[in-house]
Length: 459
Image (tube, rainbow, N blue to C red):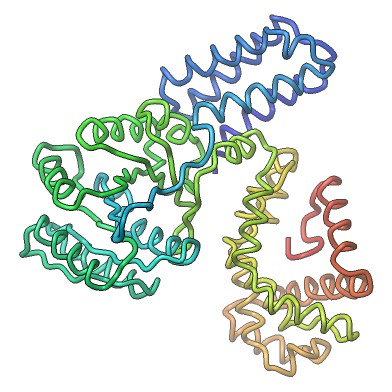
C-alpha cells in the first residue's frame, strides 16, 4: 500500500537524516523531491501546495535548524504534516443515539459499497459487540440485494429482505421499523450507486436520508481513483450531510493520492479503509499510523492489535506447552502457523507494518511476502497423511511423488516445504527452553540486521 509514495519520500528524507546541519538549499532540494512524489501519487494540487508550505515554514524555523539532529527533526516535521493533512486522529462512528442507530452508505457504482457494508457489519459485531441488521435499497441492481443477503449470512448478521419492485424509501422505512421490533443496535443501509453523479440519484438518497435520519452518513470511495476520489466525495458532501469517508481498495493503491487528498478537500474524516478482499479486511483509519507507514517507519501498533485479534491464543499456548514437554514441532504445527499468518492477511500485509522495510531490497521483500507460496505450502501439507505430518523423515521418493500430485505441485516444491519446516523445527528447538522473550530478542536481531530470504518463520 502506497509503495511508490513511500519509496520516494523515504529515500529523499534518508539523504537528510545523517547531515550535521541543514541549509535552505538542501531543504529546498528535498521539498522539490517531496513535491514530485506527491504529484506522482496523484495528490490534489491544493493539498500539495498547503503541505509543502507547511513543511517549509517549520523546516526553516528554530525547531529544525537548531536541532542537534536536524535531518531527523525534518523527518518529524514531514510526519506531523502528513498527520495534519489526513486528520489528527482516528474518528470512530458515533453510535450513541437511541437504538437502532442508522448508518447510511453512499457512493458511486463499483466503489465496493455492498461488500464494505458487510465488512462494517462484521467489525461492529466483533469489536463493538453490536447486534447489526443490513438492508439493500439498491432496487436497480437485483444482484446487489442477493449479494448483500449472501454476505450477511457469511458474517452472521440480520438481513432485512427487499425487492427490486419496491420503493427505496419504503424499503428503508420498513427496515427501520423491523430493526426496532428486533431490538437491533445498528442498521446499515446500502444505497444504489451510479456510474456518475446525477440529479435523480441525489434526489433519491436525500429522500432516504430524510426518511431514516441516520446518525452516520458514510461516503464509500475507491482509493485507486486518486484525487478524483476527493472531488467525488466533495460533490456528495455538498448534497448530503456526510459524517465520514471509507476508502476501499487501498491494498491496490500504490500511489496514496486519495488518502492524502480526501480529508483536506472535503473537510470530512476518513473513518475506515478497506485493505483487502477478505470479509474482515476493514481497518479503522489512523492518520498517525499511516503517516509512519508512508515514511517507512512501520505501524507496530496496528500489527500488535491484529495479532491480538486474529491469532488463536489457545492454539499458540498448546504449541508452547508441547515444545516445553520436549515434543517435536511437526508439519501439522507448521501448517497451523501458516494458517495463522493467512488469517492476518499474509506475510505481505505484516511486512507493510514492520519498521525498516524500505531499506530491504525489493527482490527480498517479494520473495519474503509471497503469500501465494504460503497457500501452496498449506496445500502440500494437506496432501500428507497424519503419520507423514508427525514424522516427516518417512517422506521419501514415492511419498513425495504422491504428495506433489495430490497438491498440484512438484517434488522440488515438496522438498522446499520439508526444508522450511526443518529450519523452523530447529529454531523452535532452540527457543523451547528460553520462552517468548528469547524469541522476541531473536526477531529484533533479525529485523535490525535485515531480513534474509527464506530464513526463520516462513519468510
